[in-house]
Image (cartoon, rainbow, N blue to C red; front, side):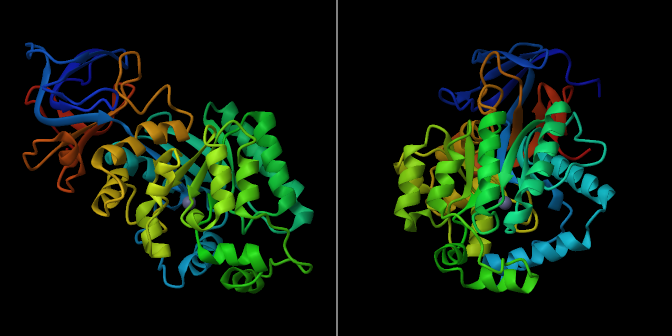
Length: 423
Ligand SMILES: [Zn+2]
């Protein structure tokens, strides 16, 4: 096989689904120097890379994951709901504390796995920076440095570490942000420091909010399974924790340039929080992780409620500690199968809306002239009349993934006009 891709080439596919304008049957996509320079139809030309079975879509965007757990083979057990699962995550993390090599290897593995699923951009929640930094090749990254702690006395030192890592990321050329972990794990003084920094540093935020009924109980009365967990861990504060309700958090998150509310599973029961989310929807969006929510909370996110309220909804996989893989398309299929989104809506959540969530709306999410050539090439097993149905068919596979016109997963054999993940 010759060196592929060259600097300039044209892909002709059965379908091109640009997510801006309708799908193009027999569409042609021209790429030069890593950017899209032409998009349209027309007859096949002799030097086109002709892929008659392929569907080309914008590179998928995973709005929420934790790459540090990408080496977890099977999701941790979910019995006992979120508090019990969080307890298992803490145990897992303690067992691996200070294993820098392992953290780096897990992150690399997660990036590779994501690329193999057609993903070209990722919103990662990070608890520490990998030695050697993030690889330049592979999916684009927005890394949100996480911060948490119930002890008000240590809020300043926790925040300082997060700010230090945030500025190290920026210095290394990585798009960065901050992540207050969740309303049940971040004290009010730490919340104020993080929200203030978001505004001052123009740093986007991402935060797990309204993920469980246990969270609401802790915030309401200071009791329940989270209280039991915190007592067991010895982190509950002697004079009670100073925690903020979801509604106050939403107001704080809206102070910065942009924020992702991760999950939002139980926002349909919190009128006040929902009203504030709607009020600030020009700066806020929700990232849902359907398979994780189904596993841990036994339900699916209230996607229709958000959509009807005009709130952008992006899609994420969450981590391999709660999900069997990092496939964004599998998340889309879960929503479609449950009747919560049409194939077109689900794909929009995983491209256009997830790109917006990460602040990448100018670089990815659609196929359009002038944009970087971030795309996934899919091959359907069955013959579908509609490309969106073909994309949502679980038998359809990702054959190759390109970021900026370069292959980051799979392969394309231009002579045989074939592509695939197998060598
Ligand atoms: Zn998460």
